[in-house]
Image (cartoon, rainbow, N blue to C red; front, side):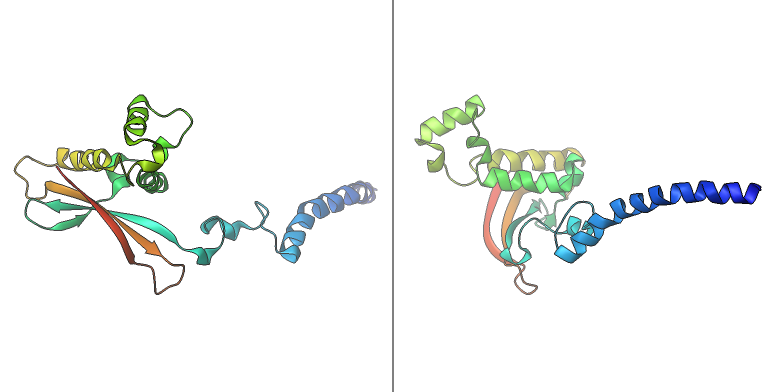
Length: 179
């Protein structure tokens, strides 16, 4: 009699579990059939940038010139202990003068806008020298005063990736700041 009551109770829950299963897997099945990117079902798109992969993008490389005359790659995320994606976004926003295009710019940015005759008249990367000096200063502050690895200048290099495998390093422009 105990086995039969267990079976009856199991049968009672069967429609609920079947409905729950359908509710959980129907969106997943639909997303694969319809080729839609619905979070969290199309998790592979987490590794892709939004939009088309083939459209290309500009990316930045931060480098320093040591007192000994060597070029070194600087890892901005390690210098500031920040998230790397946010650091490179900051370089892009600085190059594109993003801080001048907001609704309420900082008073010193507002003064620069007024002196230039408008935000569109400012040169690309108007605040970039300050940013490069800051990164160079952080790097140098971690080294002894007589170290040959101390920087004499910092460069930000812009490259264009066209979207294909072969054209990932087309040089666009460079900004250099003496320290």
